Amino acid sequence: MKTKINMDGVYTASDGVVVRKVEKEMIIIPFASGVDDAENEPYFLNATGQIIWQRLDGCRRLKDVVKDLAAEFKTPVKVIEKDVVGFVEKLLMKNMLMEIRKT
Image (cartoon, rainbow, N blue to C red):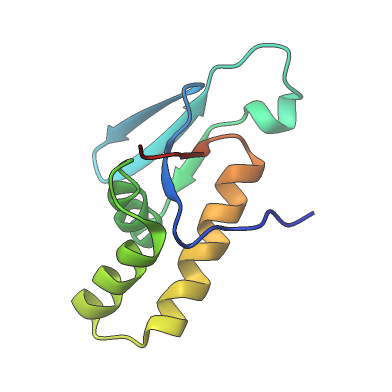
């Protein structure tokens, strides 16, 4: 089931994960107990995932992250948006990312 992604939303790492960088790899490690073993597996980020993850800092709206990445990589916004939304959906489903509200 896909999660509705809010492009005006602000996303950040869930409280139930630890993120470690080992050499050139970034690993998201869930530590919630009572969760299905399949959801408790470490998640390895490739280079693209690392770039997106670092920008999901709890400060910027998702649409601003997409615009920044599109400008940085000189790629159409729609192409970047598709990749970023897919990434965010996947990590929301794994409870590794959460949407926060800015007041």
